[in-house]
Image 1 (tube, rainbow over the protein chains, first blue to last red):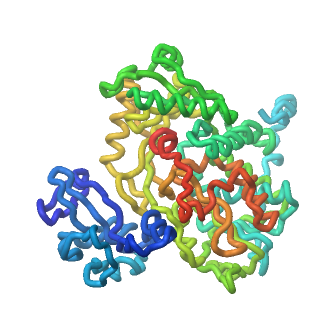
Image 2: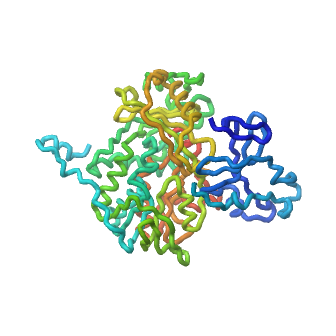
Image 3: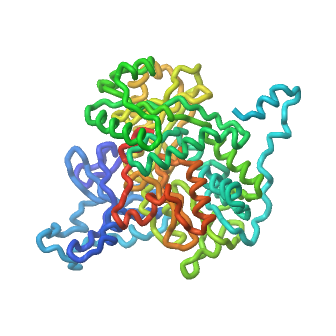
Length: 115
Length: 415
């Protein structure tokens, strides 16, 4: 049994969790091209290394972020999304203000892993 | 059946010398017209048809491990064309036709066995979806029909008609469904290609791709650099990693897919049977082993480790379908890394680099496309980049144009 540490519920069987895709920065809905949307929707960082992902503890519907190595399957860290997202996305005036962008871990996006 | 078998049958001597192995690999040449990265079924098939149909023989197939040792050896060897979209059905139907005559063409038995494939529907919604697939199939050349539960029970008498409490309402019966020995397909193509002058270099790993002014000039390997006229990438599992080496991303996510086989028993199961709701498919190989396959792992991974959870649920589903399987012993189990695309169709054809061709995104449906993939990729390369109509819908730029070929329902759980 593989254990994932939920920031809210503690260590649980990974079968209790749902994978929710990688953490990505959403393009500005007002000013982005079709191509930018396609990149956002269809492309993920498929490089072997540490990736930053959304996970949900299914029983409690609690979403959090995990940093996981996508070859060794080692989970390095799990944390509450409040660490990256300090406010809700404002859908009425969507803008690309730098302050509201999540601080996506630079390491998680580009770090090489040769484990 | 290869006709030469008859000749040997009448001969007293066993034809040892007739079964030629692959020629020993020499040193890498300084330059090849075509470098194919990946010595699996797709790579060697492409080389074979380039040599056979187009007279291009200055080809190197570079394989980091051994011939057909990646996903060619890890799939569950299902051949079928009962897809959902016209594009998909047209493409895979051509592949089925090529498979039918492959043993004769190679003069080598690939153990091709056309027993039909049966997919079970357990809900009204699935019955409707199957009806649509049957109609699309009939229209584009496949032999597929919707049959009722009575016909299912007659076709597979050993099947539990209510597995896991889900009654079998109907079945999608695909007469063209078949299986073959997957290793033999790769060996047959490799033999045919090397006899025509193609070089197959195993234990030769590509470590870099040299791109100058939008064109590939050569590849770096663990055995030195070779320059080349063009490159084809045909690596399953690590497609996105390789394309990154060439300098562009692919919309592919790696998911492990797990499968297993039991000890061989006497033949009892003729068709290939899969359940749309249990995410499980069961077939008996020509050697008598029962192959069990299921859905992908629940999250992406570049690893071929197996998990107890998935094996357990797969075995549970298989036993629900065929209860007496609980008496069987498992012989082998394994996992492979599949290149999943968001629309469950491959990525074939041109790339952002002029002379770099893509054969990627084969997810869980690559083996059945091996022959047609070889034919169309060879045509693409020999023509210098004119995309054959059959693979045009699978271009990389379909994602940017939101023009996906959605085969999720026809591939995801029922091979």
